[in-house]
Length: 211
Length: 303
Image 1 (tube, rainbow over the protein chains, first blue to last red):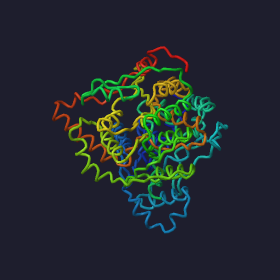
Image 2 (cartoon, one colour; image 1 turned 30 degrees about the vertical axis):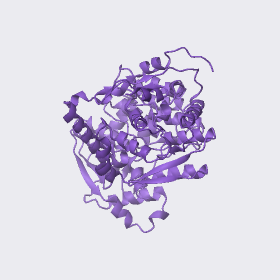
Image 3 (tube, rainbow over the protein chains, first blue to last red; image 1 turned 90 degrees about the horizontal axis):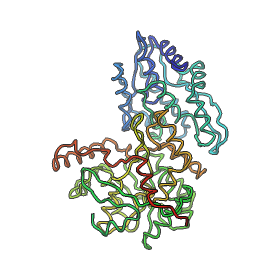
Image 4 (tube, rainbow over the protein chains, first blue to last red; image 1 turned 45 degrees about the horizontal axis):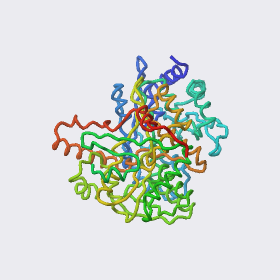
């Protein structure tokens, strides 16, 4: 077992008794994979946020993954278009502010008091411009208010030490990757053979459709 | 396939074409390919000559491929009209990408509204009737070609290298994408559907780019399913001011309708020809090594 996978599974054990909100993106799928390898499995309530007007071919992938791992996903329906219409100053907000509002709206509809985790906190690398300038580690996006990030410092350090990330940094001298975002999925697939790389970032896309 | 159509195709023809499969034959390169960007410009020159003075339309989707096509015509100084088919469920970022691009280069955008739901329910059955079409895109794009009174150029035909499983050869997606152009030419129209396969030199230059070789080297180790993103980074390296974007399949905006239409086409072909098992999806894929061998079949002479 690689140190990164060991760190992932140790962190997944800490989810015991919590709710994990899954978006269908790669971070949440990775968490699901880590959880499914544990024996005994911790008690985790996985909740999938089903947006109203979201018609991607990939939308069912996480549900298929969960079924293959014999893990139940609860579905939480959220009508994002109807909700966005209630946001008076919507067009004035930055993308980050919109994302914050969207999470807050989802979270306030919760009916239980379990601790809530999300797939936030994953470290990334990014460039400052479009050239082959050096990649720099960027601070992970903070988890929404009232939630905890699954990806913590220990996990991010283990990620940085993987052969896959080292390969990424080597490739980035020639290939103008703008961030680790694309490559990270292949690092994850190296840990779990059933992990599928995902071409889209669901939350950001939901926000695009709401502009 | 009639002889005239075979001869009109600049480098490839399809000698056997049935709903159950077809073969694509590539002409070999005639000269040593240059880098991919230079070959894009040469392809644009080749296409402009093929248009024989007809008004040239370059279709922009909001994705990177069609922007590279448009940039190629711009760089050779060939006038054209950029066209956007505006879907009912168009993604706002696609529209913004197109608008930003035409604004930046001072182009006048022609916008054609397109109701995809109405198209699939009303026009789609009419177009597919009589043609042995097994992909909805063929009907969509034939319709788009017919809508323009000139020579339309699509940013299709980008070379997609795909891995199957460990140890299996990399394959190359080809074939069915020729169909809209061939059907359109049969009707007397002119178009270039597959810009990125419009010359064998352009295809070979793509395969020789170091970023693509990098994908070939790494795909097995990291289980990278296809070369699409590496292609985008190749574009980015060659056109540094090109903005990368998240757009992959092109049909995600109406995926439900698309798959329903695809299923209906397959059902119709099954009724006509028998078991659906005999309509394989991958019949039009060929191994990468075969593609390269086809392209390099004749000795290369320097121009």
